[in-house]
Image 1 (cartoon, rainbow, N blue to C red):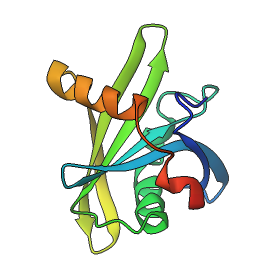
Image 2 (image 1 turned 45 degrees about the vertical axis):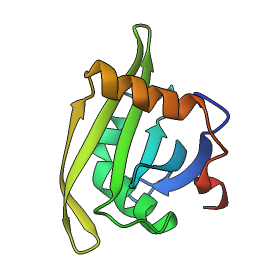
Image 3 (image 1 turned 90 degrees about the horizontal axis):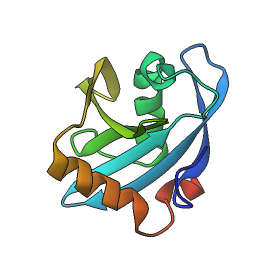
Length: 128
């Protein structure tokens, strides 16, 4: 399930309150907190989408992040390769609302983000 050894298996609750596991990798880069998430391979590609708000809330809490600096990036591995999706939220206090995603197709940004998940130190989520 995990793309690289830097991804840590983290237990979260889905929108129904059930415990689920995600691969999570957190790092700071250029003033932003990047939180990469990868769903288990047996899950549907919409797994993160259906649970984006509760996952964002729990990850922000577990990692003690400022919502204004947090970037949630979903990593999907398919037969076609790795796809990256940026999740955006309207934050009301500590609650993320109106989740929407867009695939990252810009070669420069995509290359930068892929390089971040292929090099670095173990995830800060290890203690979460």
